[in-house]
Image (cartoon, rainbow, N blue to C red; front, side, top):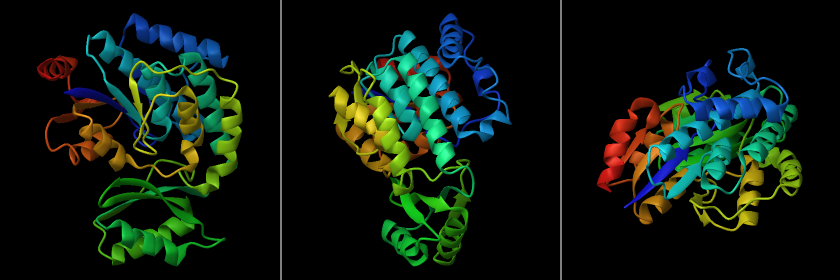
Length: 306
């Protein structure tokens, strides 16, 4: 029986999230190091105003992901796999031992800047629940054009998808989805059109920066949220990190892959619990839970039973 840590993408960030981190020496050291590496204090990144910035959101999620993962590891829990959705892949790579914390900070800051500069407004992500993939793809095909770009971005479950594109295009698809019987459509708290070809150029620029960074073979298996494959080679992990902003997320495939590899406990790093709900739909046996909703004592008990 194996244990998986999952790391969320943009969406669950909340004001004050860095100030809610565990009051441990390790957490304080990681925050201090982040301020040093970035050349500015990070204690203002999690204000409500600051979180309007893609760069700030991604840095907050990265720092929090590393802090909470360290907390799990320091609790004596043996982790076999890590997997992150979108920006969550970066703290996952750090936790796995493939990417250094310092390099991760620099790359995430650049990633956020590139994405924000490419699409400062008028674009984003929306979720559609209750339709099959073929239905969503058909609706996208009806709306998509040069003036109304929209793409399938996340394949989270059999009936849960995320689309990316212009605000007007997403609104049109969501309206049609409602007419087709979708149980829910929702604009997400993400201001860029992630996981589609609209971000191909920023991904290429991040890849160029990534080429100057040295990655290592991970100590914990790195499971790609983009492809659902376990990656061990540093160059493949680097490529996955650099390009994931422009590639669709295949989260359901990743969780199926984890389950097939005997994962029976999946622990989602704060904030949020969306990934936990999606993982539960795949794991016929075992447990999926969010650290933000469960005490470490319970997680240690469950881990001890595996």
